[in-house]
Amino acid sequence: IRTWTGRLEGPPGSLYEGEHFLLQFRFAEPSHPTMKDVTFVGDHIPIHPGIFSNGHYFDPMFHDDWTPVRDARDVCRSVLSMLSSCEQKHPPSDDLLYVGMCARDPLTAWTWDHGE
Image (cartoon, rainbow, N blue to C red; front, top):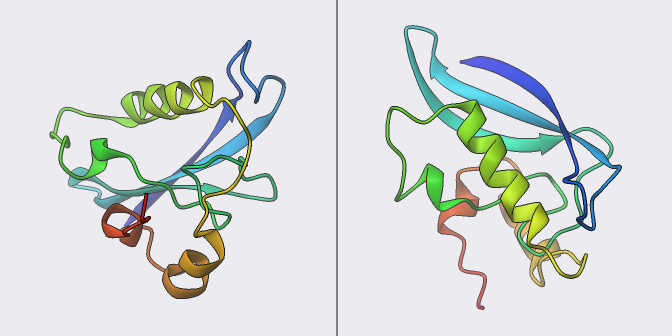
């Protein structure tokens, strides 16, 4: 597994303007760069209704909408859009339960039933 880490700046005019986040990209194997997962890492995880406090988040791009032509730029654009559209900073309502049960595997965020 190959890992990249990139710095993402909060979108201008959003609740996250002026904040900086780290995204970790993991790829399945170097010879076939299929994205395995993407998580927020470091000491500053965005407080957002779609982002768990352990850095996992759900994005349909990785599950139902994934195609081999997608890359890290597409992921960053999707994350920036998600942050830009946030109207109130708060964690997911089931954050503690999710983090307690699914903390190891970011892929579980794709199938986790948020009850919403």
